[in-house]
Amino acid sequence: YILTMFFFLMIRRPPRSTQSRSSAASDVYKRQVVSTQSTWGIIKSLKFTHMAEVQAPAQAPAPAGGEGQQRERGGFGERRGGRGGGRPGGPGGRGGRRRDEDEWEPVTRLGRLVKAGRIKTLEEIFLYSIPIKEPQIVDHIIKENLKEETMKVAPVQKATQAGQRTRFKAVVLIGDGNGHMGLGTKCAKEVQIAVKGATMNAKLNTVPIRRGYWGNKIGKPHTIPIKVKGKSGSVRIRLVPAPRGTGLVASPTPKKVLQLAGIQDCYSSTEGNTKTKENTLKATFEALSKTYRFLTPDLWGKVEATPLPFEEYADFLRGEKKSK
Image 1 (cartoon, rainbow, N blue to C red):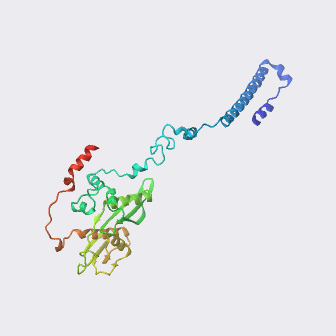
Image 2: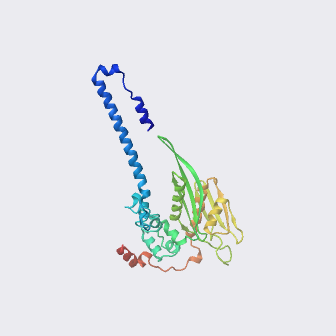
Image 3: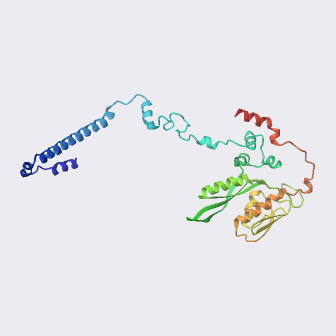
């Protein structure tokens, strides 16, 4: 309104001398006045129309029940569920897709057998050397006792034409303290993605760790059965069985690996640049994974040939495939 009044004040009647000069100037002046008055009338009509529309809903009676309120709240999302009112749990609802994401749908034969409960331990998988291609398999079997440790997160750089590209490399160690452990690495642009990828890689690289005794076989296995060696880069490590009660005689990095593997007593000796934590972890992991590569005389018995799980449960896998 202030601008409109200012516009009125600026338009003034020209002097008499200008009116007598030409009729064209007077016509222009009349047109300006008419257009200004029409503009002022349009503004006033819009003002009163807007006030009437705003005051109308307040005077209207409220609808009976909660149906009207529920419809108003949906807004423009009514067609696709609004805030979950149309289809609970659907794409438009609250938390609609979380259930689908959390639910595991196996894509391999081993995964289907594990989810159905036909395979209940990792030993059944390692006995036939079946590769694990889904990290959910390890979660499903040893989820309660599984422990994860992020051992290292370091930035790595690569020189490109645009400059240096920085990413993060994570090293994650997993284990259940009962003869199963895994080691994984992953590079990503963000730390969280790198740690998550390294954890999944460690689950895919899960291996069994054999435990044994030093001296008499009394109680549960507490140490490694034989002397083993491992290497990675310049790091060399040697693990030696130890008597019960000795503990883990090792530096902090190999000690963490031995703890997650479930070994209580062990001697160790290392060579090379052990400051490189990643190489030290890989060397210790390689040494422990060799415990099942050598059969001691107590494992020389006859082994009966049993069918593979895929052959034993072939009817189940075939029937499940047809149902899908």
